[in-house]
Length: 354
Image 1 (cartoon, rainbow, N blue to C red):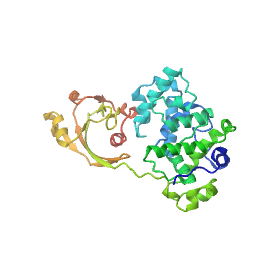
Image 2: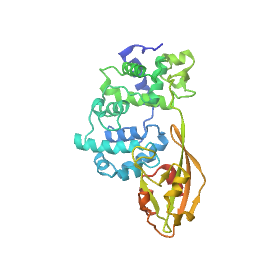
Image 3: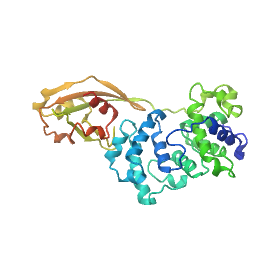
Image 4: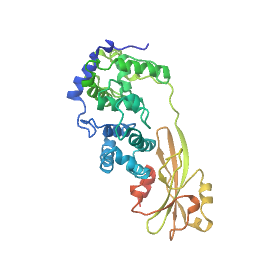
């Protein structure tokens, strides 16, 4: 049975989270201790389905290259994808670029100060909008990313199936009930929001949660029932699939490689990539007959995406000169140019071996 919070909007649990975060939470990450919405927004997008340890380096390099939202809006998509290369989920980078352009074009370079308005921007969903508006502007709105869902469902013993939209909406209502009292929200929302994220990331873990360290232990229904790991409940899961792709890795004596922009939508949309083929026969037929004698197979390997395994079959085409491969679409890219381009992680890995 779905549960409602202890004490409703009184803010008791919220006060416990705020006090805990001040002493035990994460307070030294590079995107913290700031109310700059550009930095907070950038970190929130980067942290979607990506570990903190990975994001730290990318965050610093991105800000060095594009320190303001105006700089990001003025950059080319290739520049943005180059800075993002290796982080994965490249639709985030494309939306990031579009969002910066909209902030400049529609809002004079200033991020909207409400979650409702932030959600009108590309790539900003309800939880990300709430994170930005609460952390930067003190707005009293709930976030509900994967970590916070775990905290809320466990504390409340919320066993509704989150595969159902109606149950997801009910959880949003429950998370809103837990927010700091309106009288103190402006002063505490940033620390409360950060505290909920910190609890989910460091204490209320998916497996073997550290309940003894949790400030909400005495109020947590999942802990009282002795089975925190059964929350959150989601019955419908995406099935994994697989796909085989043949890669044409053409290279010239001076180290240049042939790259073309991937179409949108599709695998690695918008990134610079080797020509891709669905079958080995398709790859061979795309190469002009005199050049096929130079084709050499490389070891097949698997690249794992969230819900798909890509079985990649690279074939190297070593040429005596920069032959005209225009029929494949794309261009020759010099050895000193491709490292700065937006490349899929496995393509960058292959090229880095040479």
